[in-house]
Image 1 (cartoon, rainbow, N blue to C red):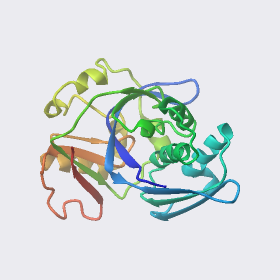
Image 2: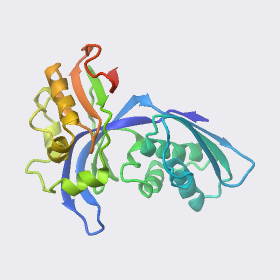
Image 3: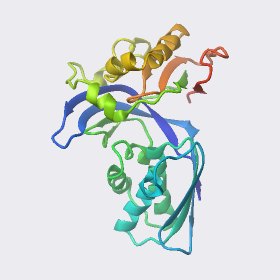
Image 4: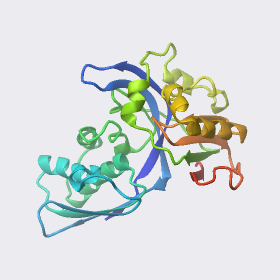
Length: 266
């Protein structure tokens, strides 16, 4: 069985408070980007456990800590499944890939797991892994695992994602951010037309990340200068996206030596 897990962008991100367990309470809209995806193949094997291989961008760290492997182990602890071989190819989007493995194992072994059951399994792997089970726009709260479907469509717009060759430590980003509860909820702001989001919908991480990594802030400014109706860093970085009028073309060479993805939303 072959699956194609996509990625996501965060539209608005409020770091509301720090929790007693060390995590933070968030408020963000997670929006799926299905055209930018990995490929995950899952097949039964005659051995016990999981055999994991990968190609494409290097997947760092020991195999046992890979999120695809952890997803398999999470399901195996709860349900009587046999061994599998998993091959990951692509960008290595861990949370989406892990969710894909949970969905794939449910199909492969006829478990018929409900969405809520799979989301609960995914929540044990990562804060945003649950989102990729249903893979639909949702307001995420808690540490990112509490999902409320939100009917946002970007049909008629063009999405451009730019990733500078700069890595941002998630732990560092959280250490520098100052949690606060916004006066107006993100849900209310999202009801505005996209053309009015600029200056209203913010990512709290930008205030501390941009001074530390000026290149990321520069990418956002360039997207706005190129005609983006709205631009923002996604999550804690380093990817930045812009929402443009449909079929808006980004001139070749503007983001030289950076990863650039463009898609007319449907």
